[in-house]
Image (cartoon, rainbow, N blue to C red):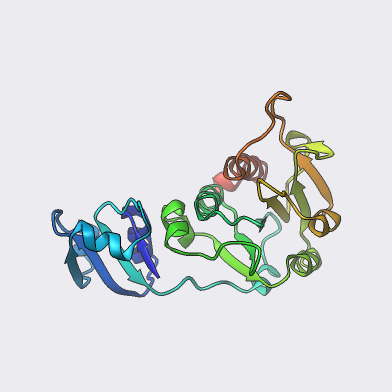
Length: 236
């Protein structure tokens, strides 16, 4: 997998990710955080960056070929602390949204994010760039069946809270202290029926009635903040 951008590459190095090749722009000096690790550097020009990266990628003159993201196993959630929050992303296929959600999750102390093997985008260079280093701080778990995953984490002691515009409660009315799983759906279809049926609560954000819609990455950031505040994640 090729990742790019200063934050994504720097955090990958600091996390000890296996790096096969480092690409640096011919017109820029090698960043000190690369030089300090004596990584093997290949100098390329902008045309060569365009050949190896997605169209319009903002690479900031640095890219790396690294090992693919290693997904965690859902069983790792069985022995989590009593004040632990995780998230499920149901049908999030836009890699920019996925990356932004992971970044917010890292900032607010969310332990893990569960995605569906067929219903969500995979972790790729675009996701890693949008996550801006957050991918190294949150467990990413990929499962074949989200409904079965929900039943399993219920057995691990998690309450299941889904977010929807037609929720029964507002976010500020919810007690999110303890083991909590937060579910977010795609902006188009929202959370699927089975996920809602397996939820303990259906919750909405208190937005203006005349314009209630938020981007899923913005919605998740608000929810992550409230969850972190209630659980004192900031103090840990």
